[in-house]
Image (cartoon, rainbow, N blue to C red; front, side):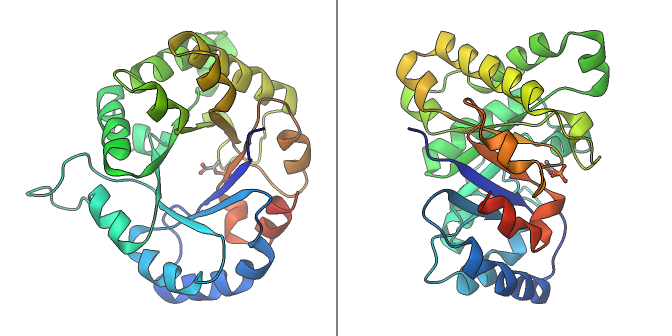
Length: 247
Ligand code: PEP
């Protein structure tokens, strides 16, 4: 049985003081061992968040990192810095990184390899635009995203990757994919992983859905066979996140 993983992507929200306040509101009711709960905070908030979450099972992640160890990469942070500050997960290839910051498949593959080499737990995002959804080529597009991200990634590392299927048309729009639409693609992704690796990796890899998840739709989405939890943006900044974690 795969354990569900529910992660809140705070994006570029929450100052250090706001982080203390929000974690104060969420931590007791999000502290469960039924599902893995991860707060994915801005890097500058990690140390404070770590302190606030002491004594809970809630884990921390960051939203990005760079694949080099150190050096002249102004503005970037390394895997070692993230781990040393107390976070263990990292999002790779969020559509906002792909589209606004022009991260391409090659960079995303390098980040996935480096995350595993360093001991970070990656949450790899994939998902199609509205245009690709409407013209019917979305599956082919997602297959390419998955194949290029997992190039030269070993079986064990693949199994320890979390994939987040996030259709871009559902992110921050309030337009959630129906549970059947989300399940169709999550199953499709699992089948691709089965073809690239083997049945064990296919059965054990965790695949989340992300895109306007809220307290009303979480239960239906997370009850689907191939959906192993969610990556939640907007609703992770509110007390509503408690209901999503306890869906
Ligand atoms: C996200 O940022 O990954 C996301 C899914 O956002 P939202 O839940 O706000 O659609």
